[in-house]
Image (tube, rainbow, N blue to C red; front, side, top):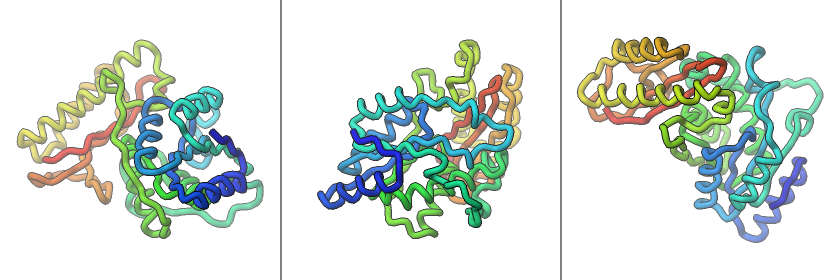
Length: 283
């Protein structure tokens, strides 16, 4: 496994692979790796000869009062996971490498796709993600890039960016990796206390019940979703959002069409930990 820190190093490593006729599958991460990340590495390995992973906590996607300074940084452990999963190259840049220290004149703005869900709750969040992923795609120039369904809105925005900015790569969405009790795996799960961790799967259980209600004929689910939020609040969750959204535009849907696919997505706080989850379903 090759560990590289600079843009020139990672480009040279990729060019060497290309000269050998090998394809590169890319998985960008912020480290604090867990089973969900490892499933992305395995997915990338199915679609490419060599897997390249970036580990970089991107400051541009954190708001002023968010957890950038306390976000878990476990590089030594992360590298061990990468070695275990037969990752070929790990790119570990710092802020100076990624952004430099000079004045910035350009940014990426997003229209419509980030109005709701996490885009509505975390202003500037997806602009920061689009910025760093665009830079990483330009640096690495992979054949394939893999992202997880848990961040479905992120995937849709990156998908649109690939299309509009003409990135020459295949984008793949991998399914959500869950613990045995249903909780979606996340680096931020490490913030949960023992009591909170035992309670956290209730969110996914409520979401499954909501999908079941819809699939049993409830095509105007707004009031039902409010009841699920109320039940979560009574157990100690602080609700951010829970709704049904279109898969393409990420816009809320009030009345569902029978036989059409939608996204049920939610976000809550449990103590200081923010949890997100989603289910793609057919009504």
